[in-house]
Length: 538
Image 1 (cartoon, one colour):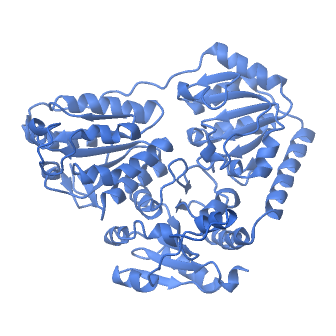
Image 2 (cartoon, rainbow, N blue to C red):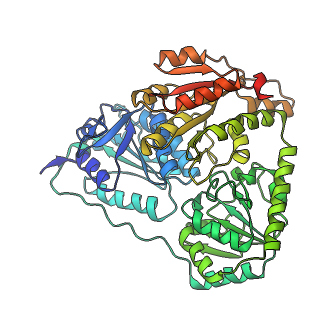
Image 3 (spheres, rainbow, N blue to C red):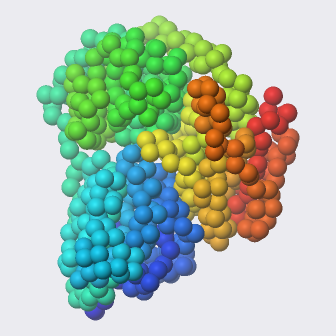
């Protein structure tokens, strides 16, 4: 049966396992819409979720990827659709997330000529090249399955990065007479036996081992937990590595890379086992770690083995497979005396962190402690770059990976709500909650309507502290008069009502608890505003 290239593209996405696409239809993407549906259960079609801005669509696809580890997809028009969605591309590139952006492009005959056609960027792929693993324009329909093979190989067997594929409107309409089939994704790279033996020798001769866990270890929780228990190694996670091992494990300092107390302990280790982490400055807020020991790095990306810190031994491959091999070969365990000593060291580090909390961080902790008690353990928390979530990085426990979604490298504002929408669409039976600052919420506030249209039970906790509080504080430290950081906020309750949603100013603990519990069951999102100066946070 003959179909258009656009229809065949959507059909091929379905064969790769894609069920949902986020976007806003436009005059240049109409041919794709023939194969899409607004309905949740329309057989043979991929569901399309309407965003209110292409940036929101990109963030929703990002949220899908953060929550599942698999590809999120956004479909946008050329020109402004691409530039609006590019922030999500940058964030997914920085945080190694698999996002596929499919966009239109003007007619092939006009490309690069600057003739002033609708939605024109003379060289559109160059806009997104620095933000993606690759960005390509389709020249003929036959390019589509080839480019998809390259994209899904990156998503599922290499270091995941976003990909942008543009399809000009004349190519979208061209007929396709064959059924495109997905290519088999090749296996991940595998570490050599020689390098594995070198790593094992280093581990066996080391006395004080610290394991740093990053986002690349998210699928290896069980294996890593066994390894550190047997080694008696302290675990310090990055933001992306939160929950790889249950944060309640007595060997774990969750999100500890952001705390000086944990980094000081790291400097005393004679061996650092870094699994799935760039060890980048955005993981610690200060730039370089002070490392005096040897380093074993486990990473799927061979370019990361020696970039920031030269590895004594580099193991290139999938973290789950590599750690499993280490466990099978090491097969030893430390004494109970050593294990108890290490656990006591972790207790002391956490005590120091508690002692050094600022006044604001103590208020954050009060809310986060209550939230942890009332939220189901399996709740996914989608967070923005705000002070409440900064504290949560190291002072909020999650039981497994991908339960704390937080932007790190690119650190854009406005992702929390649309990320949560994407996560909830991907995992509809999982509770999902939003933690966002008042400033960041306003970046993507219109996506509240998308959440309502989809009847998503989303508690949206807005931490209201009078604008961009972190920047206010930074200006204070540098003795700079405040400029542009104290904007006017709306009445959030009235705003929610205008968007057909429930809202409350939670000015006491009982109201906060009641509102959050109801929000998990509500047929639509609920805004819960918590002001930093509320007395109940003292």
